[in-house]
Length: 284
Image 1 (cartoon, helix red, strand yellow):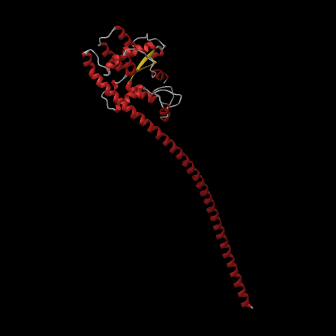
Image 2 (cartoon, rainbow, N blue to C red):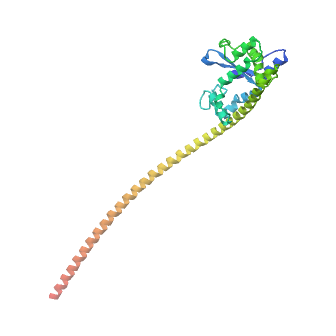
Image 3 (tube, rainbow, N blue to C red):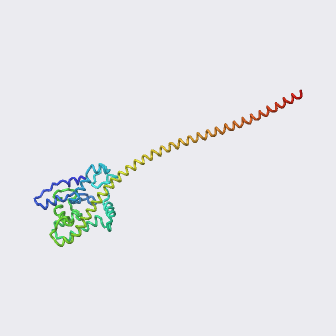
């Protein structure tokens, strides 16, 4: 994000209207190249600047769940790291049903641009700047950011990249015919990518919302599980109490039966003595 902040400052000065137009239409920033032993320039065209500003807007990042300390322009919402560029481009190409999405990689695009550039009639100095820009040389001011290099990148490399992107008219008719299809394809692809980036950001926000809703309902579920466990324990307790009182009732039924039998016994004894008494009276 610091590199983008530096790139967004329009501090280039020139008296040439065409060169000033290039400075207006493009921003330049740098990132670490492979091996972390040199820096690689990144040219950002005008139609992507608004998207870059949105990606660096702190309020948008916070509402999207990006951690405050994440320093990356394309951050991961799950850590302080960044998203995988290859996976992001591959998913967008797959969703757009692009034919042969495996061909849409940074390596293949770099090779294609380099091949097209090699066919252009440019000076050796411009050619060397281009190769340095594409990372084909190890002599690109290692680990040092210099404004003159940034200006040279935009003026000499940017102008030819804009030709390939269909944003400037070249002077070579053969190059224009070769790059016409590529420019139209690139413009269409940029529009598609911008659309899917917006859609992706929207669905990321929706996903974050539903994750929060899911977390809420998980907590509610845990609460009711605890309530259910409580009442199960209460039910088990009362079942045990009920079983106890059933056993007590059975005991007292047995006691009652016992005393009924005792009563019957004493009734029989009473009947016996009544008969004895009657017999004695008869004798007298």
